[in-house]
Length: 145
Image 1 (tube, one colour):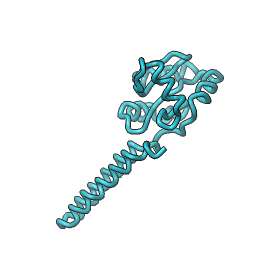
Image 2: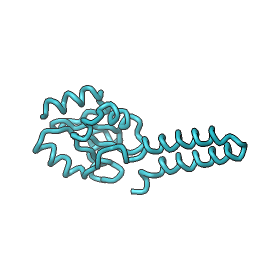
Image 3: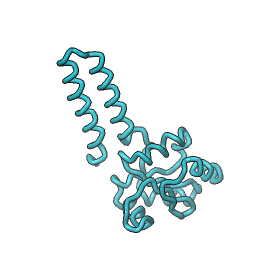
Image 4: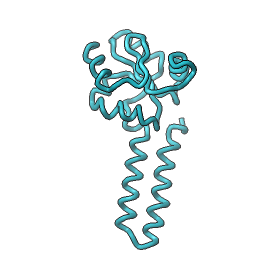
């Protein structure tokens, strides 16, 4: 569980060090701006902007019941972040599984990707799609409703 917070915490720590150095040099405006940028980067790479993750088995059960896609992701993945941002509010309609929190989810992804934990892997109707176009995912979501 702590592994998902390593990158965001490292970004905040680095931003604090850089901002402290800039403050020491007398550039408080640059220090504040730098710290804000690092905190925003930390937020983007944290699990906070993603919908609440559920376990792989629960996601698959819900998907079978309602037909909505299941997205397997992990914090710090730029492709997962791209998918999440481009889906906008519609992302909350998908079932999200954090493979770093759910070993069963990681196993599902490895099975679908020849032993690799390549994310995002989106399952639609039980079929895996690796790093699909967000527009395609949106279409799949529309057709499942």
